[in-house]
Amino acid sequence: GTLVEHEGAVTCLDLFTPGTAERPSHLFSGGVDGLINIWRVKDFKIMSKLRGHKRGVKSVAVHSSGKIALSCDEDSSLCMWNLIKGRVTYKSKLAQPIDEIVLSQIDNRYVGRGRDTIVVRDMENPDVNESLGMKGKNIQSMCYPGSTYLFSGCADGTVCTWDLRSSSKGVEFKAHGKRVKGLAVPFDMGGNDVEGSSYPNYFVSASSEGDLKVWDTRKLGSGGDTVLEALGTRQLGVRLTCLCAAHPKEWKREQEEEEEEPEGKRAEPRKPKHQASNPAGSRTKIMKKKRKGNNKKYENMSRFD
Image (cartoon, rainbow, N blue to C red):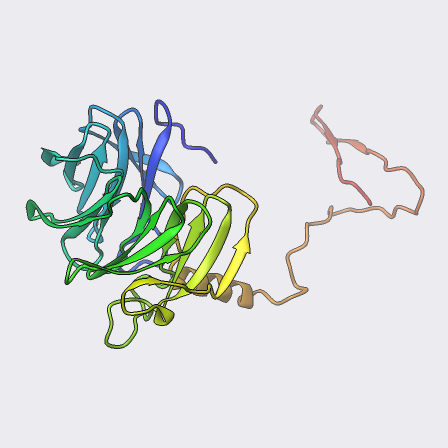
């Protein structure tokens, strides 16, 4: 379906999944009208409209607790939202514009992606904690699933790994021929970590050329530029603009639902109660009956194929 509560283009989306749930419960959407709408996923009924931005919303991120959210706009303003009361609790002017904002699912830090810089801040302390600069690079995407590492994708097709503990760049390698528009870790916070390391085993990248690639971080070097061969590649034939990965709980649930339904025992459409035989080649007749004491006519519109 289509959600049409925004006056203009929808610029960002974020799904919130409660800690004990297997599927998202609410969808947050931001638009050029400066509004952030909250939808209930079950029936996509709009629950609330958050007003606090004077310009178009660029990015919105919801904390894992479901109580607070962050958003940034075209005017370089950052808003912190109290989702229980539905109002802005903190608003500040950023020193530099941010195109995307991502919240950590472990601590109170968040990451902001600028044109050539990635900043890491603490929500309790708005001062910049870390600034990761990439001179001469146009950052197009990033992935921040953990608390001590992140990935960034650039316009020249390269992907960089970052260690936030030392605020240093790990490895940079050529992943695609053109812009890297999306990065994602398939198993987000569950079992995709290398023992003794903060990096996951696998991550996925997407480019504007329409290809998806799966990478193994265990094959990356210790630092500097490196050459890495993708574990798998798939060309979708479309121009990709973003990427996200589903949680394994959702896959497991879908597989269980498929296994519960035996093959060959799918529900068939009900047949008419009184179905007359229809020899091959004969024409379907529409029977009209009149009920006693009632002038209404009833038509049997069943098709006998």
